[in-house]
Every structure is written in C-alpha cells, then in structure tokens.
Image 1 (cartoon, rainbow, N blue to C red):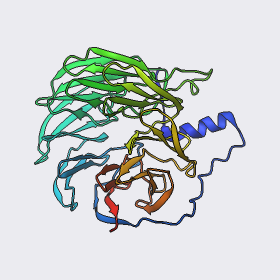
Image 2 (cartoon, helix red, strand yellow):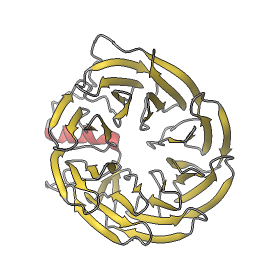
Image 3 (cartoon, rainbow, N blue to C red):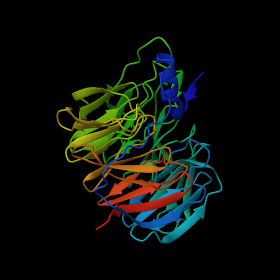
Image 4 (tube, rainbow, N blue to C red):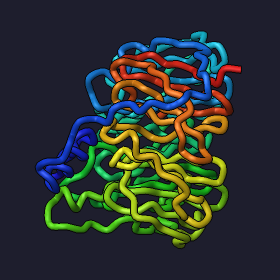
Length: 378
C-alpha cells in the first residue's frame, strides 16, 4: 500500500534517524546591513489562503493578470499592476493544486481529482473533467493541450477546448513517497514530468508516447525513508537545457531534446528551482540556498544561514533571489553572491506557496490568504 510523507516532517525524521542529539530549533534570524528597501505595491486577500492543509496553491501570472485560489475554492483574478479585483468565483469544492493558466483559460485541480477550467476574462466555468486521483500541482497548458499530473503516478493530456482526454501515461510509484507531485512542464511538442521513482520523462504532447526518460536519483539505503527519491520540483527549461532535482538524489542538467546528461551534482530538494544570471538556484532539504553555474554545474555560492526555517522555492526578480520561510519572512539575496540585502515579513502564518517573480516585482501569497506584490523601492 502506498503511503505519503508530509514534507514538513521529512527533515525532522531524517535528522532524528541519524543523530538523536541534533538541534531541531530553527536558526535565529541573522543581523545584516539592509542595502535594499522593499516597497509593497499592493495587497489583496484571497479567502482563507492555504488553510490548515499542506497544499501549496501556486499562483499564476498571465499577461496583465494574477490568478490565485484558496483551499475552499475561491478563485480570484487581479490586475497585476494595481491588485484591483477583475473577477472572483466560488467553485464550491476544495482545491488542492493552485492555479495554472493560458491566455484564455484558468485551470485548477481538486482533492477529488477534478480539473476545472475557467474563462480567464470572466471566470465563468468552461468545463470539468474527473481524473483518477488527487491533483496537487497546477495543470499546465500550451494553449491547445493541457498536462495534468495526479498523485497516483499518472500524467494526462487533455484538450484545452473541452477537457476530453487525449492520452494517459501511468508510472509505478514506491511504497513511501513525499506528499506532492512535480508540476509538469509543457511545450508545443513535449510534456516534461518528474516522478516519485526519481525519473524524469519527456512525453509527446499529442499522444503521450515516451520521447526519452532519465534517472535523476536511485533509491539507496535500508529504510523506506532513506529510499525516498521523489522529484517534487517542477522541471525547469533554460534555453536548450532541462534541469531537474530530486529529494535525496541529484541536481541534473539534461539535453531537453534527447535527455542526455550534461552534468550532475549531489543534491536534495523538494522545491522548485530558480534561474537567473546564468545560475541555477536550489533551496535544499537542509534549508540551504545554493547557486550553481547553469552550464558547468560548478557550485558558485552557498547560504546556510536559514537552517531549519522550512524555506520554500527560490524565486528570482530583478537582480535578486528570494526565499520565504515558515514564519512568513521573505529573505532577499544578491543573485551574484548569496548575501542578504533585505528581509520582509509578509504573513505571520508563514509562506508555503512558491513565489512568482516578473521583472522587478515579486508576488508573495501567504498561508493566511494575503497576496502581496513587492518591488525594490526607488
């Protein structure tokens, strides 16, 4: 029987299994000279936010709009510049995936395995499709096709127009996995997906046939916990290279067309990757933040001052890279050297949802439901 492991427990269990005397208290916030002032452009409430579940509920930015959803199914579209509400819709069903979007549609997934498509301009419901299992990552669209990954190891290709199924790829899953799925990445030709087996696959966007597959991590160790190698982070494409990272495995760079390995580094992460200035940014399971050279894989810098603060995915904006933690602090660092330049508290209940950076603006969705747009003060 498949069992899932909440991400918040992973580091605690791993630490306890290796050292009974390990300090499990979160690191104190370090003092530093703030050289950047952050300005809040706007703030808007999104219902109850993530609520008491461990759902991440990623937001989506498409054109001039920001889309967000709370755990109870309240979906809002906001003006990206002002935060003004454009529309809101109550789906009347718990949402678990966050939001995916295209130029004309907004997509959310539910705990019951439904995909709901809404009109991006009005919020009116276009269609609903029931799939096989919970949907914990946002459905992703290229405009005509939709890729959806479910908790039971399946990836579906659906028609954007009506939600009908084009294909389904089914992958075996281990007995113990992290609770979550990788967000599939879709292009005009391929769907790239990471799995709890430690593999990443490229699937044909039209019929789901496997174009290539590559192992990112191999299960090792005697206990089930030691053998967890989930890929929960979304694959990331920069140019002609695809990057993927697994828990208790590796960070790899692959040729996006063939899957051929270009370089690999030992790494452990369940958070999405970040990219900027020729670097790939990783927030590790040990709550370190690292920057690797995107072409060679060489480690450029490491910031280990946020230990046990349960940081989320690194997000670049402007010349900075930011991570948020369980107390709701957003920590902002230089992309070039990893030094802190600013810190801002946005939500006392913490921040789990991956932040989104567009140009010089950072969008932060806190657990209690506040969505903020931040930028460097001029």
